[in-house]
Amino acid sequence: MKVRELAYDEADEIVTVITMRERKLLMETRADAFVALPGGWGTLEEIAEILTLRQLEVVKKPCVFLNQDGFYDPLLQLFDRMLAERFFKPSNMQLFRVATTVEEVFRQIDAGEEAVSESKWFETR
Image (cartoon, rainbow, N blue to C red; front, side):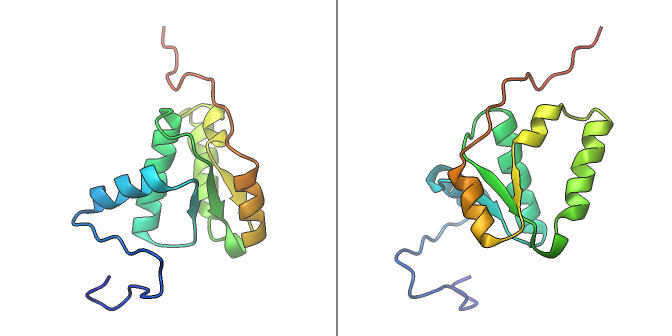
C-alpha cells in the first residue's frame, strides 16, 4: 500500500510486512476485536479465518460484521443454510455478532465474546 501511496502518513504506527500470512498473524495477535466492514475477497478471507480460529477456540476475541445497508445479508443467509445443512452446529452462529451502525459495532465489542462450549464435531454412528 505504501508503494501505491495509500498509507496514512498521520498514523501513530505503520507496520510493513512481506506476506499476507504475516499480516494476518500480526492482526490476530495485536487486535482486541475483529470488525468486518463491507469489502471484497481479502475481507471475506480474513474474517473467515478468524471465525475458523474462534471455532477452534484459538482466538477468543469478539468478531462483528458491520452489515451496513444489508451488505452482509447474503453471507448471513449462507451461514443459515450451512447450519440447516449441518455443515456446522448452532453454536457457530455465536462466533460473531452483527451490527448495522458503527455505534452498534462498539456496543457489540463491549458486550464481549460468546462462550462456545459445544464440540465442533458431529457424532457419527
